[in-house]
Amino acid sequence: MLEEIFGRGIFWTMVIAAVVITLAYFYVLFRDRAISARKFLWAQVSMPFGGIAAVLFVLGVTNSGFRDIGGPIDVIVLFAVAVLGAVGCAILVYTVQSLLQRKPV
Image 1 (cartoon, rainbow, N blue to C red):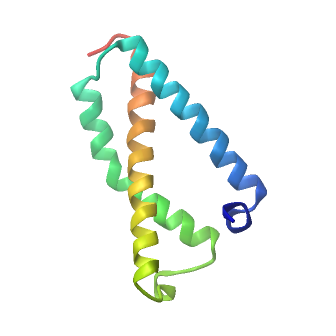
Image 2 (image 1 turned 90 degrees about the vertical axis):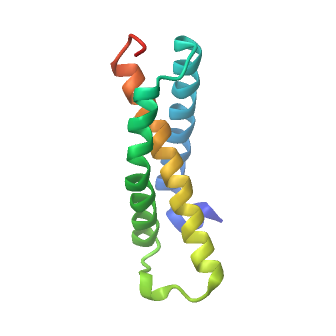
């Protein structure tokens, strides 16, 4: 179903990116053996931007807009997309910071 919504290319690109980022995140966690509070704070600061970007991306890909929200399930789905985008952005930011800054802070 998601492949039909996003298209084959975008869908599989997102799947591969998610797998690569997740593996890099686990690598960083095992390598550093601790979570850096400073990096975690910046990752949390990035979360609203990731949530907004995810919602705008989904609305853009599906050729929909906020005026097309028809009922409670649409609001729930957009909220879930925002939450997943926020968490994904936090993981990405934390991972990139850790990979660029080798020494744990």
